[in-house]
Length: 60
Image 1 (cartoon, rainbow, N blue to C red):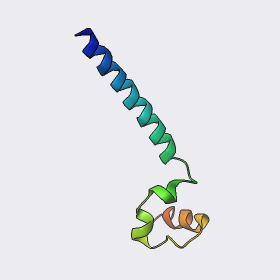
Image 2 (cartoon, rainbow, N blue to C red):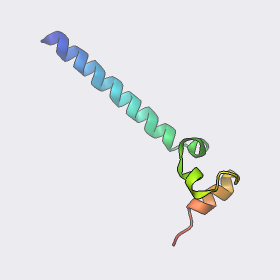
Image 3 (cartoon, helix red, strand yellow):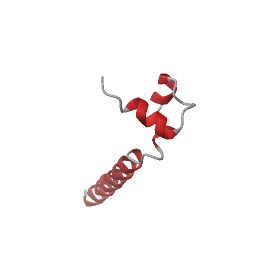
């Protein structure tokens, strides 16, 4: 049972590290256009980054 517990603990730690890394990656402004499919749906994929951010940051 100790072996199973150690393996489970290692898996949990690895999952946590991956979660933190991906959350930090998603929050990077320079990489968001490459990760977000909303850009394709909204039709702003031909815009520059500043135009893209202005489009999505408009308040209704």
